[in-house]
Length: 234
Image 1 (cartoon, rainbow, N blue to C red):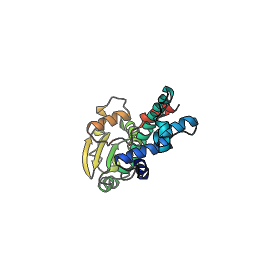
Image 2 (cartoon, rainbow, N blue to C red):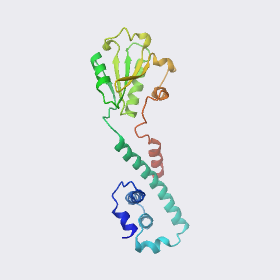
Image 3 (tube, rainbow, N blue to C red):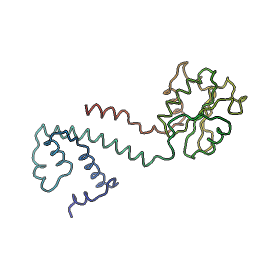
Image 4 (cartoon, rainbow, N blue to C red):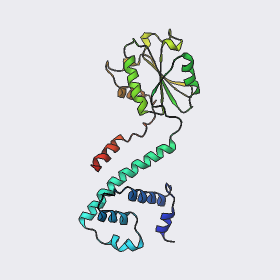
């Protein structure tokens, strides 16, 4: 049995070298735009999945135009393939629920429950606030934004009075951010806005938490690649 036949029989997502090549060839063929001229599609098919009856055509000397056409298509296709592989890997490695919003905690009991009963691998960030305290409303807006960018992190907020321990969370220490994982307190940031300028944004809060290594990797941070791919397509 020929090596080409062996490669064609390999299952998708095979992890060996032949499997990777096989996945790449399949992806490359599948991703060719049907609007591409027939001659170009035929060249790409020959280069991606050569057969015995194609050898003579593949091995012939290509023109400069054909070479540039193949190189250009390969580069765009490789970007899409890399992005697809990253997405597949993320889906396999991701765990637990996705939250994607800030949860309002109505009582001290709800506060304790979210700390003690959440999945042991889930990071919990709790904002303790009061509506009339400077910086609290702005912090809420920042966390609303971060919750969409870090959907595996459970962002919560609770009014200081609702905690049942208002004497511990007076206006002098608000806004406060508490960070937990597996029921353990990892970060206790009182008057957190003292670390920011008077006007601060979600990126400032994100950078602050990252300084302490408290945030996970962003949920598939490939926005730049997507924009680049879109520009290439255009």
